[in-house]
Length: 319
Image 1 (cartoon, rainbow, N blue to C red):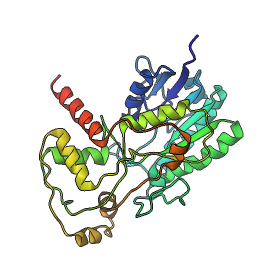
Image 2 (tube, rainbow, N blue to C red):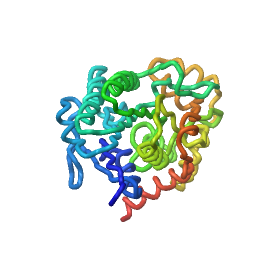
Image 3 (cartoon, helix red, strand yellow):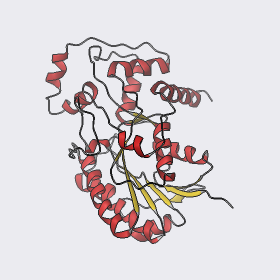
């Protein structure tokens, strides 16, 4: 008789969902139950985030012991569309609470909510971000995720469901989109980048490492009372990241030395300031809470993940 744990996850056709499906299929102790918007072969239909009921989620999550909530409206997922504050809150907060309600009705035991490090802020400064920082969401997306965390904690306590909140930084890897995709395309085309003098250090997490964390948390038997911060444990500067991406794609990095005061001025400008801060300032993560409670170490280096990303794109172009 199998002791495999049925683990449902939404967002199955998104970047993390695709990676998580592969990670779960390779794990003998897990049985994946994928929820996608289209409900393709072997997948269940994921309820519409803007128009879902508890009953919809109950139907979708039947038989699952663990549910990983990946479905969300993302800030850079669709370059042709932006969302209002209300749309973010409906899709990312109200829908998550509805999913928890339906999961409880279906007899579920543990929900993992994938939130965002953006709740802590844009940049950490010299002191790494920690789970007990005062929340400082700097975008409508991060605010909607913080609202969801708050509402889910209260509701999970009422329902007796174990809730684990995970706050990842930027996730990179196969099928990456958004600003990271733009950076990769810029480097591949060998256009110059003005980051040669930047000396920052930033934590990220590769797709395979992040999916490993999610599987480990899904199967972990401990009670988690605080948000879980995760990272590769391999901080890189922006110039080093550019060089690693260039190395993965077999091109020469074109880094230009621009005086640091120029970036300090640009960081204060209303339109581009936050983007400049993300690229030029520190973003460090203290993941000690995860280290203390889960036997997980990153299997893949930053270069490993970038190399796989580049190789997969080459294979798609030349099957």
